[in-house]
Length: 482
Image 1 (cartoon, rainbow, N blue to C red):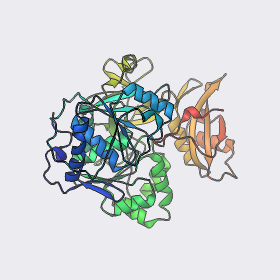
Image 2 (tube, rainbow, N blue to C red; image 1 turned 120 degrees about the vertical axis):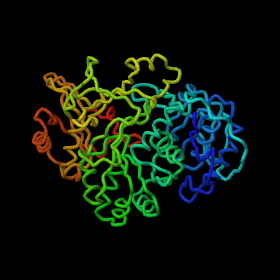
Image 3 (cartoon, rainbow, N blue to C red; image 1 turned 90 degrees about the horizontal axis):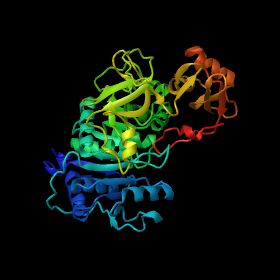
Image 4 (spheres, helix red, strand yellow; image 1 turned 135 degrees about the vertical axis):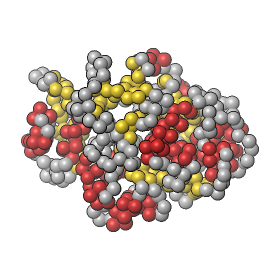
């Protein structure tokens, strides 16, 4: 197998910038040396845990584990002790890597600790590149339907997905990626750190997301921005009063949003202010990246997550398992994928792994339609976003986009709840733009019915101060109930 990090294992320019977290920067030569000091400590370990703060220490630790051929288990620092104990018991790491200043919680007390110091230097030989099927990362799912499961991501999946994105986005060593994503998740760690390192480019991590930080780094040489919808929403709101931000976003080569659907109003505000579109892509922990809008494709419909990436097989299937062959933008089915981007399985969970597949097709649980050009539009998760009402299948996402276009709505989420007549009824959860004067429920229902079909109008409207979200900005719809 070719090297996961050619710029590290066969460096031509060790002085080239690799990572920057705040004021701390590492060149490729310095990153190799810092990671090289850890490799002898890790070699031979079955697995290692990484206390994944948004820091240079986390990046060095993960790179060291990958260079040593040892699977890394990124740990979310905000995980509660009960869930953390489950992850540690399930993954059984030999040790934990952390920054010297990190105060680790009680469940980690029994593990040997290795402090990561990015200033360390060692230039010893690196082990041979492991087999393509060797586990690289074990990333735990959010656990919304039970204890978190460890998705085993082989090196093959990382290289396949990152190389496919390079093709779609024309991603090269000249790109400087800016983001503020957490590093315990695929988006921030695999795409946001390992992606630039595989290309031989560089990443600038903001630490804490702010529109000012985005403007500063893009204006200072950044070419790409990765974010989640909550970040782009804040950028869209700031554009009206921040000319420096407008200029910086307009000058970026590529703006990418992921981890959840970007609402259409934010797409429109950003494009109107900067002339730039936000590219959406679609992936998940178990599959890495499946589709993306290409950088060289003119935008047709904001909200599309593009066409399958090179090497990815994708189909949309009905409830009875038959494929949807109509690319009509209307027929909803579950997305299933196969290809080299897929995980190897759930750690210690052969039954869950088997249940996740239909033959060699992975059941994503995401519902979508295919447009006439073959591109995919997601309508939501099967478990929380597909509403069966009055004999119709309704995707929550399109109703949310219409609600967000109402001037009295700041945030919106749509769910279904049992109804004795309809089976399920559509419920809108609204954060008003003006809490003192929320838009009346009838006005919102008419607003939706006027732009979509009448059966898609909300039958109940509930007002909140804020929507519950997880660390990646996704709305936790299971926390919404009457």
